[in-house]
Image 1: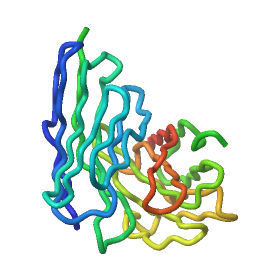
Image 2 (image 1 turned 180 degrees about the vertical axis):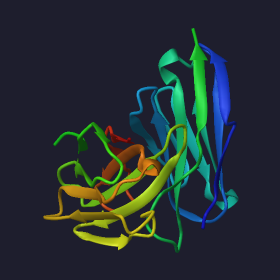
Image 3 (image 1 turned 30 degrees about the vertical axis):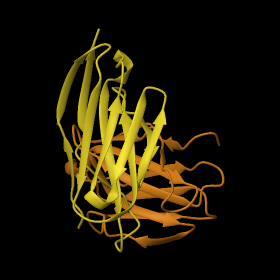
Image 4 (image 1 turned 180 degrees about the horizontal axis):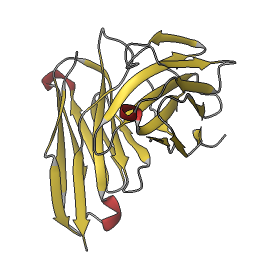
Amino acid sequence: GIQVEQSPPDLILQEGANSTLRCNFSDSVNNLQWFHQNPWGQLINLFYIPSGTKQNGRLSATTVATERYSLLYISSSQTTDSGVYFCAVESQGGSEKLVFGKGTKLTVNP
Amino acid sequence: GAGVSQSPSNKVTEKGKDVELRCDPISGHTALYWYRQSLGQGLEFLIYFQGNSAPDKSGLPSDRFSAERTGGSVSTLTIQRTQQEDSAVYLCASSFRVGQPQHFGDGTRLSIL
């Protein structure tokens, strides 16, 4: 099945810093989503982005489907950005299910 | 409802007992998904429904696990003869239809003693 690799696995930032999280996938995809899991375990859908670029406030995401990767940018990070960021993909020609990466754990210090 | 609702939020039971976990999706969402997340791990797909049918049951770990959805709305995940390795957070998500953005409930934390 499709493989999803996220990097870095852990990231520690000072409040106000910018960061880029990466998601590589091994096959063509129909669907790619980014999620944030906060320290209380709640999962929030950040972006639905099978291709192209989207922005939502301080967050933006870009997926280059032909090169099989996606990037999540966090600008001017805040302590509330802490948590785990997951990338999830649905393979073309495969089952209509999302396969999740192992996540990037982000800690933003005040 | 406004969001995906899961119940119970926590469940502690003895090894060998059966448990039922419930998921009430966002109103109007036709697709519903179950995942499992063990401590410090990513999400493991279990099963999804489009309407009342489950095209992909490949993620169910064993025949002790089953799920159903009736009326195109509420879904129940049942685990029979629970084992300690079943301890995890069980998460439910729904989307307007398959392939669309998924929205998660808060999960059921299951602990098997």
